[in-house]
View 1 (tube, rainbow, N blue to C red):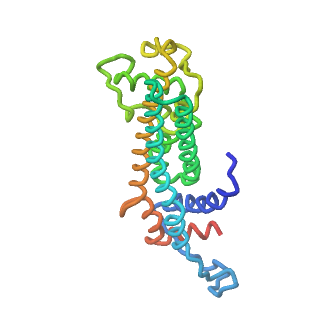
View 2 (view 1 turned 180 degrees about the vertical axis):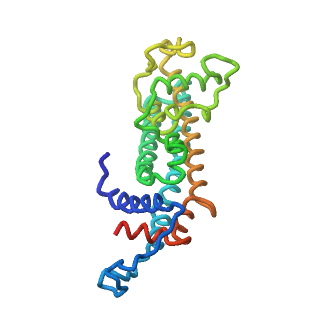
View 3 (view 1 turned 90 degrees about the vertical axis):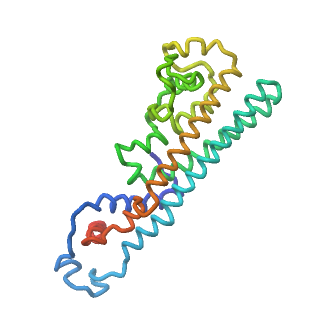
Length: 273
């Protein structure tokens, strides 16, 4: 993955915090007698005024936390933009909006997705704590790339519309129970940008059997309605990330308090120098 010049300083700083996070195991160590040539005199590789704890606190408070907060706010704005687009899509079908208005609303929703995804690219550099738990489950619910399932998204578009999975009344649809590849930013990309309205499945199941025969307007509305649901789920997951990160027991505080017991943080920093 290529990292832009704008993101490189964040990547370098975050890699340091990631290393510190990996070092925050339940062990401790002390400075050896020969560290820095056996002297604490500055200028001889010994004593230092470098404050590792302050560095971590600064990265947490001024880089990572603002990024997660901004993503949560943008996810909410993204949902509103997609809702607005969907309203215009329905108005166009009813003859109350022009094609030009429909395309403008779609373009606005697509721009919103790009803005949301651009913010997530910053957060992608900060995979630690909540984003690594359970093999990256939360991260994947937000952005499952490179894993994706366009057929799965098309199926869930109809399942959501029907309210049940594959016309089975005993299986009500709940996006929270669906796999990551049918949710998040990857799913929204397909719903908002794919011009081909036919489904992507090589074999249509019962729910998709008549999909390709429906009007373009019907299919666009079904997709935009599911996009609103996916966008709402994205807001929820961005809030989960923020909740797990913030607070007295959040992972941000865990990082900022690293090294208070023993000298775990200091020993880790020494290995980095």
